[in-house]
Image (cartoon, rainbow, N blue to C red):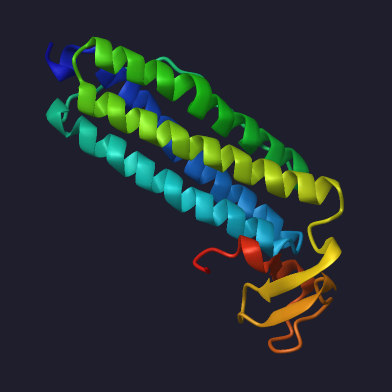
Length: 196
């Protein structure tokens, strides 16, 4: 079967559109979190948005074989327009879980059925990443909901996302003693990207 005549081509266009919309939603949600001085949540949304952009690029590359033709898709996309950060995190959690557990596995099965094994493999790998996105959003939503985003039951290390200052205690400091950024920039050291 030729790719441009396949159901897989339509599914890849839907995936491309969905990843682009997710990236935009997360960029917008991150800006809302920043306005509410939840800079660590802003960082989580921004970090995930960059990964969604990478997924969109993978799907755009798959569509190169279409020769510039237009593809009509029928799809629904979440709006998630809210100012409540907890709701935005929970919505993101659910959307990512749906992509990882239902949408992309179904797209992968259709691709395999049509003989596009490489595309099916990549869809399944991206589905696993989407599940980690869901888990990330769930973890931060749980912390926010339980009022434990900046407080812990045990002493632990906190890191300022702005300057990297490290602090040990049961709660993040109200103000970073190094760069004077507010508590909203602190994150548990174990959750900082790019650390051991």
